[in-house]
Image (cartoon, rainbow, N blue to C red; front, side):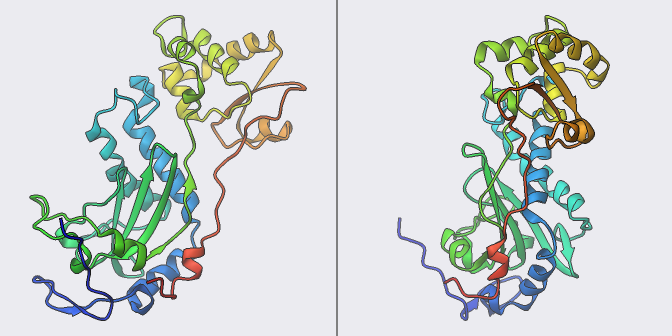
Length: 309
């Protein structure tokens, strides 16, 4: 198959719906610069990390299904793909953006579409052709994500009619040369249950023994690891595990482990915990794993007006 040769910025984009218009490099696109100016004032890597984690947790529905790994064969490919649809609403909420038509939202009065993929490309719908798009790539195998702002000119989309909804993929060359990376590759938090040996994971997720015993096994095996609330719900298989916490604390205390929950309890022990997070620590033991997602530098935004291709 012949390599796709794209028209470069400055040429004409032939869009049969909106008519011919000039292909704009983001540095020459006043609407793109306005949107970038707004985005620059927001902690994007942190917002996207939280939004993606919430979207994955929503799809896995661990408290009901016991699933904790999106790459598990128990997860249908269609469910995996639905992370992007959920992410749209999480981003709108976290960035306090309105839900609008015909695209997903508006930033400073400019229509913007929100797209995400757990694969290698995005399906750009016909209404978003030649419009500004926030495109997020989630690499599940590497536990990381990245987002670009790109104007999805029709001339920069793969040829053909696309699928039945008119959706077409964005050419890699256009993403690499005529888009703006909003933040570097950023780690996604790993569900701590993925650290468990297979046999221990089976014990934690088994119907028996009871909830107290399962949680005790989990905290013992994951000593020093921060346990988010959703992980606790997955292991407990209950939406109200808190009432068992006292029993779990007593069981762990007999083994020399202290169970902490929330900011205040963590701070009292010099450990960074967010609301709803748990950790089992041993006095004099190794330093706990307490890393929380932090805002990364956003070099793509700093150089938003420069030409990268």
